Length: 271
Image (cartoon, rainbow, N blue to C red):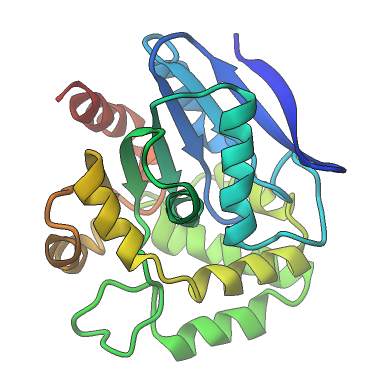
């Protein structure tokens, strides 16, 4: 059974952490407004062989909702505090979506000495580009600006944004009503005004140098969704050629295709 704990990363701000299993540590960081719940299948699977840790970032899930620090520089220092408090050494860090930004920011601030390997799930290291025909990016500048201005201004907009993203990008099959409701409720645990700040912070990040350095320093695997497959693979082969790339499912492939995803991770960790 997983152990629950709260780790104070600064006075008045606690992060919720789930931990199970023993062995070499693997740490999961969820993406934009999502929580430990999305990694339940990974927690169950990897805790049989690894010390498995899953984190709610600040203002996500059961962690403290705070009006400050909702950007990825602070999220990187939060991750460092969690690892220090739990005495985690030589960890595999797995970030999904904007959780990758937390990992790259950690690397920017603290290097890779305490990292054994990296798994980056479906996030380009730079979200915006004027060279969209060459670069793997999250989307066109105008489209992302419209998403920010249209959706992330009130709770209904946040619901509509996540619902559309879930059905159009996250999952390939048709979602049951209760599944879609669960995904949307995951996101709504982060208030819309904080979600808007996280969204804009994430889109303006540039971690290309950290991605390159990381791939040269530690074994690195990037798993990308099928709709990115060709452009993302070509982009990463140029930016970080020493890293490995796998293509699977949609943006939330670890949930929809959990067995295949876990097998890919197992193979990478045992190499």
